[in-house]
Amino acid sequence: MTSSNFPRRARNTNSGNLLLAADTDDHIRVATNTVHLDPSTPSYVTLPIMTPSILRG
Figure 1: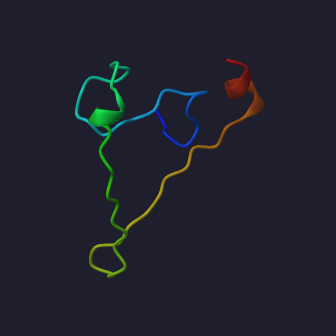
Figure 2: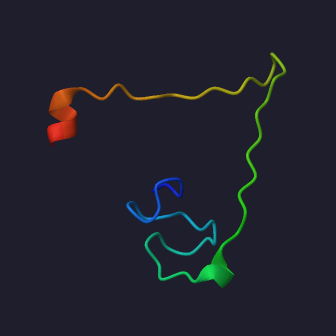
């Protein structure tokens, strides 16, 4: 799920409702993301490596 590729992909409205629910604009909630910069609480992103065989399915 991603809202950055809507309407091609299902969006996440952050409503707390089940995924793919028929949420309306009234259900949409702004997401707040935090990036931790302190060495004791570092943030990180794990990105998968997509090979051609995975992309073909």
